[in-house]
Length: 151
Image (tube, rainbow, N blue to C red; front, side, top):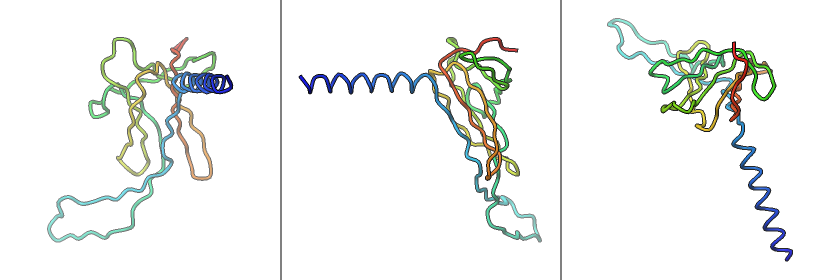
């Protein structure tokens, strides 16, 4: 009997954990990336003075519909999700959408962007920016709840 109760308790805890995990999640952009530039075709008579890799600091986030190479940038709006107001919010994964959404993390002093797919079960995402001792920080929080009062 004790084993059955323990098994049921574990099953309920796992189920609740799965439900809450799917309802919302966060994507945190790395604050700094190391970048190494390379000259592809050296002009005649020139040589490269190499420095160590350049550290590039996080700058901003962008949300794309489909792969970022297709340049389908979504314009953020102001609105609410689950009763909380947000300044930068995107609606993602409408029922008719067939391509995934991506978040892109852009960095200063570099043209490199890091991209990550947004889970297909999410309906809205919002950006939060903050600063710490390493510099600017960006977090994209996504939820299965739809955004409201967008403007």
